[in-house]
Amino acid sequence: MEVSAATVGNTSSGANVAFQPKKTPTNPVSPGDGKTPITPTTPGVPNTSTPVASDDGLTLDYVPTLNFGTHYVDASSPHTWSAWAANDGSGKAIPQFMQVTDNRGTATGPTGWSVSLTQTAQFKGTKAGDLTNAVLTFNTDKTNNVVSTSTSKASSTVNTATNPLTPGTAVNIFQADAGTGTGTNLLSFGAADGSSLVTDPESLDASTNTTGKVDPNITLSVPAGSAKVDTYTTTLNWNLYSAPGNA
Image (cartoon, rainbow, N blue to C red; front, top):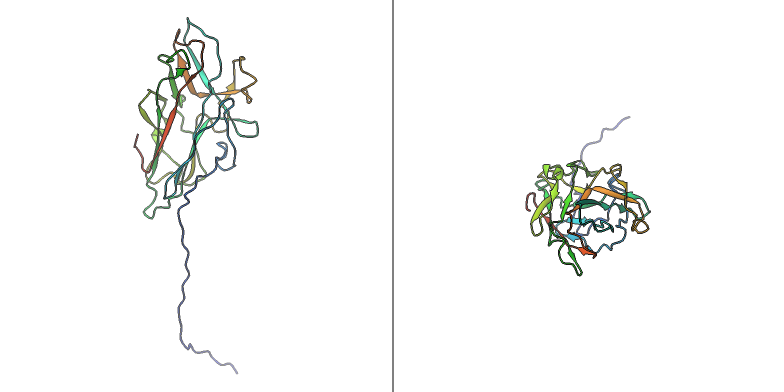
């Protein structure tokens, strides 16, 4: 004999989960796939930059350090040199790149972000003074090489702009428009798979350029007669903003 079950009553319980923004920077990842951890370096120069992190989960994880090598003085002809390629930590040449991570998780949706770049002053020698009228240029091929595993990667016309730097003047070099740029995003200066890298044509410091490659998407142009026998340096300042268009 079957007995039907009658409902005696019911009650409710809850389930809860909470999330907080990740306030620590994300380690650099490969421009090739946007996910493999790497330890990038530039041969011949120390990377003295430190990551930038906000209190709500927006971080500037990595910016490039540049080396344009050693060259003979040429008083009669202008020259343009490409920056050395980066080393991914295993000896493999990769394009120079920068990396931003947005883990803010804003309830109203991604608000976007931007990074400005300023060359603080002209390249200056230890003895010879300024490298007069030298021009440092980023993203010379005007290609949008944004790499991300996110479904809303940074997408902006800013990321296709060629940027010849004027000392003391900021340019907006990397940007995510509102609604884009969540997760980790890389701007690769050149093809992300490294196919745009070329063999270093110089031999003066070939043993120092351990990858043997240069990145034609970052160049230094020096007028005839400007260079003297010396070592020239400059400082690049990278500023992270919590919204697009703040250069």
